Image (cartoon, rainbow over all chains, first blue to last red; front, side, top):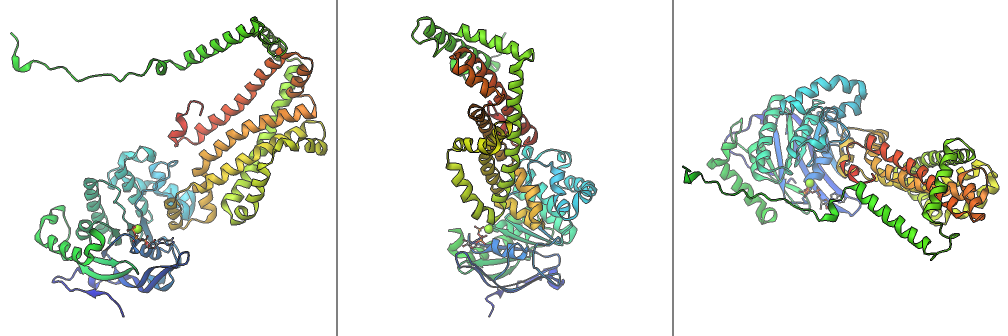
Length: 272
Length: 282
Ligand SMILES: Nc1ncnc2c1ncn2[C@@H]1O[C@H](COP(=O)(O)OP(=O)(O)OP(=O)(O)O)[C@@H](O)[C@H]1O
Ligand SMILES: [Mg+2]
């Protein structure tokens, strides 16, 4: 029934044996508005501490999948279970990041970072979380920018602040929808290394939507390749590069092999 | 003994020049225009091209400005009239702001408001609202309340539309962020949509401030009473055109005061919206 062909590569990533965090079965989504089938029969399991990327052509349903996983959008069919609990709406144990940093311009950077706490637990709890927010800012190199308004931050700085906002509630899983695609390449490389460090430090499970093959390969334990019309996962490619990954790995032959393999799978559809 | 290799070549430094007319500072530009207009005005009246009943000379107008100003500062009957109109305008504005904001939230936030209330509001808004003046006078009598009602009635719609538009202004990303944080509808309204809509709401309030002035004065023209509008009508019926000019000038100060109070509040509360700051009279 499932169209996923798992291609076993030599070294099994460590995460293989870890306990499943996300379990998705037979997921399908048809948008009622235009009766467009965005996803059919998606099956996937994310394990504790695993970093999984999904790559595919524009409009193949990546954001739809992510929104359903986040509880922002109800599925038409199928099961979505996180930590043994069905996902029936947004949950505090999910951290999200979007393409735009989306900081509120009338709040300072720290106030923006504690916003999730303010919304869930009120102003008192947000005040109490300020110190932790400042620690997080320090962690991403924005120590001095806590009291600055977002209008004064560069795109990369704003996105780093958005990372802090995602992390403030200590989520178990991170759902990332092209978080750095609006950034220039150098900043992007830097942010990706930051992301890897953060995920490894926290044992976080991460699910990343991206258009960049190199980004997906350098960060992931597995890459899911999607195809459009209807949106579905056609391959599950394990990445056997050792951790921690470094930017220099981009120049290794193994990296080139993996990229070539995935590019083949995507065919002309995505990167013509 | 100069070292040839160190010979400095000229810097490529140049200045971008504005045209002369763009370099005039504001005070000077305003003064020049003012002097020019008064000079032409003076010429027109001096040469007798226009009857003094239609257009008084600058001199007569100045005399009357001084007369009315003196009357105002000594707290004579004109000050009372100006105070009456000021109260009418303030009450009318506050009522318009309260009703307009509430209706705006209803229209912008609920499907019911959008589907049921908005069409009626648009229908009323397209009517010439001044035409309701006799009705308000018939309902509320000749004292200040009928003028307040007319002023508020005229000004409300701009605030409704601006508030509703403001609530739509939050981006899809921002809404999704709030949803992902588990924000309730009320939290999303208070923490996201209203702050995002503030620049729109302030623009609505500025438009309303103009409408409130028009409504108050129209009410006083048609419904008598003790306001500035009644004074203007009186002077006009006595063909005292210089007095009319002077009264209108002082009246416009009231409108300006209201407008700039709103603009000041906007700069104070919408501090993050830089583009709003840059306008000359923002
Ligand atoms: N709210 C919606 N209503 C109707 N159709 C939608 C909606 N959102 C997305 N779609 C459609 O569903 C399909 C998948 O969209 P989705 O946003 O998931 O794609 P994507 O893979 O994230 O694309 P991109 O890489 O460009 O972000 C597209 O064909 C899109 O037109
Ligand atoms: Mg997308």
